[in-house]
Each structure stands twice: as structure tokens, then as C-alpha cells.
Length: 243
Image (cartoon, rainbow, N blue to C red; front, side):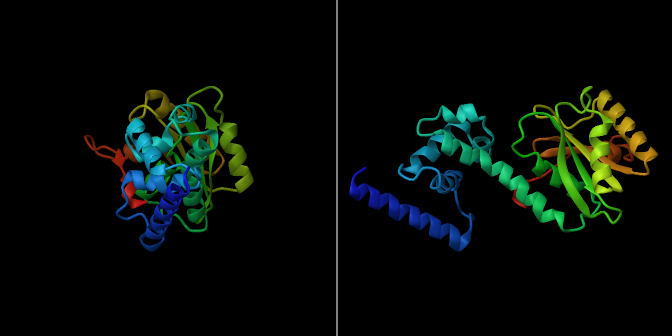
């Protein structure tokens, strides 16, 4: 790269960084956000071109960050280091949100916890089961992936929950699983699994507060749905603008 071209790119990078530091990401287009992020993974290239290329391939910033590693690597200009940077962002976001909540009492609001869980599942492409654990004051003790695979599979056992409850001395548990390519609606197997977990925890003096199903930006609570009049739905959808 010629010296003059280097200076042009350096000046542009500094202006974009300064814009972010002065006003956050308000007013940034998706390609600008991605371009800024790519500064830290691609020190020499024009990241504006690469950002546009990624958005064109995957259609949105969120889909770029959630794209499989192998597909990102197919995009010209993307190498293993840069792809790893992009894949790191959804996991970092989940870690940050979990850490921010860990020292506070989480209110027992159905929608608040559902929104929290939607964010925990952001970027997770495979079906998995999470447990959220609380003490008797409903203070969050932790949120952990208990099992990779279906909540109804034979390999997901009550022992997965029991070990965490015993270690944390939890009083309240919330279970969640995702439907990566479907709707957040419970199957007959989901309902039976919920009853089985409830019975087990109740026998130990532990409350199963909810069993959430997550599907992209939507969630549904099986326990909450039982209390609703006929015709009402427990499905909710959140906006990422509320993060």
C-alpha cells in the first residue's frame, strides 16, 4: 500500500474512532459499526469495503456476527484472526450482560427474565439447555449451559440440574431451552419434561419458577402459559433496542 493511501486510511480510522468515543454508535449505519470493529482485526486493509462485502453476503450486522465460522472465512479479505474476532462479539455480549446482572436482585417479572434469556442465547446456533439459579432472596447466583442438545433427550438428566443446585445452594431455578429454527411453542415432550423437572425439584424443596423456550427474539414460558385464560398467548418478542 502506498504511503499516501496509508495516510488516508489512518485519518479515516481516527475520525471514525473519535466519532464513536464522542457519541457512541448512535447514527452509525450497520456497515460503519462493522467497519469500526474490523479496524482491530484488519490493520492494513480498507475495512469499509470488507464491511460492505460482509453485509451484502449476510444481509445484516446480526447475521454477520451469527454466521458460521466456515462461511465467514469464505468472504474475500477474511482470515482466521478476523473471523475469530467477529465470533467473539456475541459471546462477549452474553458474558457482559450476565456479569452485569450477577450482583443485583433480578425481579421476578416474566418479561424481564425472558428478555434476559433471549440475550443469553444470542449467537447460539445449536439447541442447548440453560439453568438460571437464584437464592431465597431471588438474587441471581448464575446462568449456565447445562446441556448441549434437546431438553427432551435421554442424555439430559435431572443430575445436570441437581449438581448445580447443590453446589450453589439454590432455592429457585429457571430452566430454558431454545428452538434455533422454530417457534417458541412447547411440544408435548416439552410439557412432560417440565412436569418431570418440577416434581424432582419440588421433592427437594426447590421451586421451578419457569421453563422458557427461546426462538430468536421471542420467548414463551410454559409455567406462565398455564395461568392464562384460553385464547391468550405467553409468547413475547423483544427489541434489541432495549439492550
